Length: 165
Image 1 (cartoon, rainbow, N blue to C red):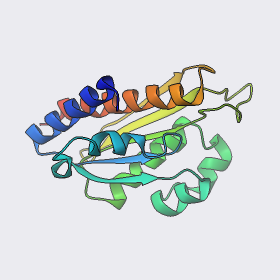
Image 2: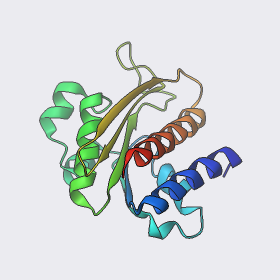
Image 3: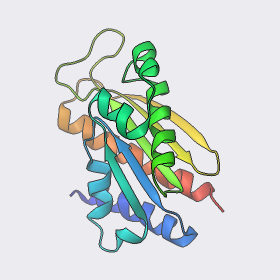
Image 4: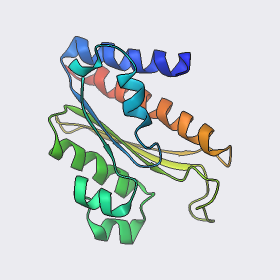
C-alpha cells in the first residue's frame, strides 16, 4: 500500500476511534480497496464494521436494497445509486458512518454521458448527514481511477467523522 493511502486510512481510523465511531463501506468500482486500505492498519477492527462489495447491479439490490427502479432510471453510476448504496449499508450494518462508491474505472464501459473515469461517491451518517461528490478523473487508467477513488472515499469518511460529536 502506498504511503499516501496508509496515511489517509490511518487518519480516518484515528478520527473515528477518538469519537467512538464505526465505519462501513459500500464499494463497486473499487472492489473492496477502501476496506483493504483500512484493514491494512493494525487495530482497525475497533472502527471498521464491515465492507460490502457490490460490483453487480444485482448485488447492489440484494445486499444494499438499492431499488431496481433507481438503477434503471439513473444508472448504476449515478448520484442516486451512490446515495442509495450508502443508505442501504447504514441499514444493513452497525456502522455510524458509510462511504459508497460507484463508477467506471475503464478501460471500457464509458459513453458520452458516463465517460471512463466518472465516479460517484456518497457518505452518510446514522445521524442523518448525507453528502455526494462526483469526480471525473478521465481515462487515466483503471488502477489510477481506483487509487484516486480510494483516496477520495477516505477523505469523505474523515470529513464526515470530524463533523460528528
